[in-house]
Each structure stands twice: as C-alpha cells, then as structure tokens.
Image 1 (cartoon, rainbow, N blue to C red):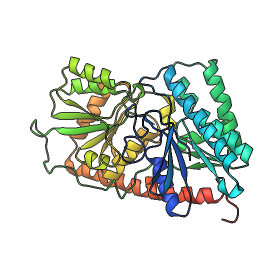
Image 2 (cartoon, rainbow, N blue to C red):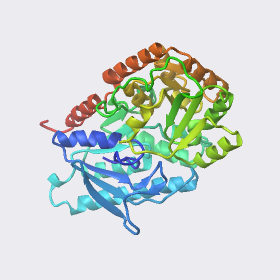
Image 3 (cartoon, rainbow, N blue to C red):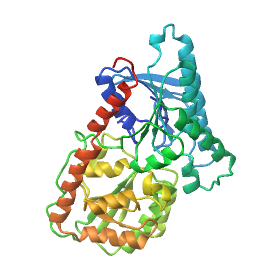
Image 4 (spheres, helix red, strand yellow):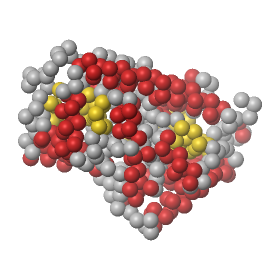
Amino acid sequence: MINQFANTPDLPGHTRNYEVAKYLVKNGWRVDLFASDFNLSQRKYCKLKKFELFKINKIDGIKWHWLRVSSYSINNWKRYLNILSFSIHIFLFLILKSILSLKREQLPNIILASSPQLPAAYFCLIVSKILHIPLVLEIRDLWPQILIDLGDKSKENILYRILYWMELLLYKESKIIVILSKGSKEHVVKKGGKLIKWLPNGPDLSKFKFSSLPNEELTFSFNRPFRLVYAGAHSQVNGLMYVLNAAKLLINHPIEITLIGDGPEKNNLVEQSKKLALNNVKFLKPHSKDNIPKILSTFDAILLSLIDSDLFRYGISPNKLYDAYALGRPVITTVPGMINDEVESNKLGTTSRACDSSSLSLAIKRLMNTSRRDREMMGIRARSIAEKTYSRNRINKEYDKLLRSLIPNE
C-alpha cells in the first residue's frame, strides 16, 4: 500500500490508509505501507532522525515504511521535487525488495497505489508489470485535471502532458480503480478506466461518536457565542480568506470561528486576521486524528470551506464533512455541486456560495438562528447517513472483499 501522505493517528492529516490496512491485518493480510515521513500538515519530518533515509515500524500489525523525501513549505517547484523524490524512493525500494526476494511467495499479491501522486503510482505500475502483480489504483484527487481547474497550468504545459499520459496508462492498466468521489466515475471512464469501485472516505464510528450539542441554552449571547470550527489544511484552495471576511461581517454577532490546522497560507491568514481586528476568530495548531473527535464535539457546527471549482462539484470526498456527520453536528458548506446538494436535500445544515463572504456570513447566521431542536435533528439525520453510507467499517469490509477478488482461490 503506497500513499505519500498516509498518516498514523498520532499525526495530523488523513488516516484512511492506516484504517484500511489495520482492518486488513486483522482479517489475515500482511500489509506493508509506504509513506513519506515529511508530514504535509506540519511541513516537517516526524519520525526520521538526521541522515536516516527510511525507518520501519510495526504499527497495529502493519509494517510501516517511513521514507525520506525532500521538503517544501509553499506550493512552488519544491513541491514537485518532493513528489518526485518519493516516487524514486518507492520505485528503488520495490525493485530492491523484488531482487532480494528468494521466493515468489515473498512478493506481494497486490500493489495498491493511492493518488494524488501519479508519478509514484506510475512507478508502481512499472513494478507491477515487471513482477506480474495486479495494481489497484485509488483515486483521491483527479490529477492532472486539478492543475487546470485549481492551478495556472494549460493543457499545453509539459508537466500537464506528462501527467496526462501517466493518467491514461494507469487507468488502462490497473486491475481495479477505486474512486473516493462517486462523481469521479464519468471522468475515469472517459479516460479508459474499466473496473471501477466507489469506496468513499468516512469516519470510524467507534471514535467519532454521536454526541448532543454542547450546551442546553436555546439562544446565544456574547457570554456564550455560537461556536463554528474549521479543521483542515490552510491553503489557497480552502478559501479561508473568505471565511475571515465573513467573520468581519459578523463582528457584531455572538459568533466565534475557530480555524484548526496548518498549511502554506496559515501565516498570511493570521496576519490578515490581525489587520482586520477580528476578535471573533481563533487559530489553533494542528491536532492528531486521535484528538479530533473530542475537540470537534465541543463546537456547535462544523465548516467545510473550498474555493469555487468545477472539480469540487463532482471530484471530492471530504473527510471533515463525514466526521461532522458522525459526531451529529450541523454543517455549513461552501462546495457547490454534490456536497451542497447532499447537505440541502437531507437538511444537514446550511450552504453558501463559494468565494462569497456575504453568502457565507448569511449561512452562518441562518444556522445560528435555527432552533436548537432543528439543529439536533440535523445532527441525527447526519449520523444516520454516516452509518448507512460513510461508515469506515463498512468501507473496510468492501475493500477486503475487493482485494480478495484478485487472488486465486480466495
């Protein structure tokens, strides 16, 4: 299992691969998981000592390989060097492992590569072809389309063209393609994908437990504001500057917004908050996934913020949204398309136009002014959807079944 940005629960960031791998180990699989030691949320090395190229830990039965890669702090050329360094490292590691394996039984039955790192997945495809091992491709983000929709690249850009070529080969040659967003299927089919399975992100319901709203008051005052939280990356695509501008519009209302996390825009956002004199905004450092359920349950509502993009209308599966569902918290989203439609049709919170601070401020006020009883019902409906559709346990079972279908006599 290969994902550059996979994390263990003691680190900030997504833990999907850890949770899938842990379940597989409990059901008889031997799992080697390869990830970068450079934590994306904290922008620092977490496990490796100086001059260490890699480290292997046994974590809940998973053989976890931490690999050294080049570092970066902002999304410039160093980011691509970071991705390339991981790709080369994983390719050399897998080739070396195959050379040192004395018996075929020592090689893996399956290679599972998780995007968005198409170069790493492409190198895994080469290894899978050399060793005649099936490749399962997990699509988290639609690269390289994301460079067009969210970046400044054109379809004539050499980087885009290389990644597009890799994408076509990966879709064509992978035995199974797992998509996290149901809306991605049409895109993958058009590019040559055949056997496609939807396995979305989702919370561990034993950790993200349903809880009642944090206070029994029916109205809010300046002594007890309506508390809204955003927990996640602080980058341009998250549109957090629009959140700050919405907070400015709400400065005279009993509303408090907390932003938890880190990223390339964090320092700029803190400075802008000071310039705007926002006494209703708090910034907190990233927290490990283990601590997130307890922290989020202390808030009245949870915010999902992204900029306006066609890609986000159909191509995302946001963990933080499904975590909110599991906790039974109303949500406020700025994601047009599938996400806002799900929230509105199921009455799980309020929605806003993306990149529109005025619209967001109105959505926040609407939810604040919604009766406690109605907000409780939003949370109950959200928990029900989490259990029926997004449960991590259900998704893990489907993953186990899917992978076993690739092994003879299983």
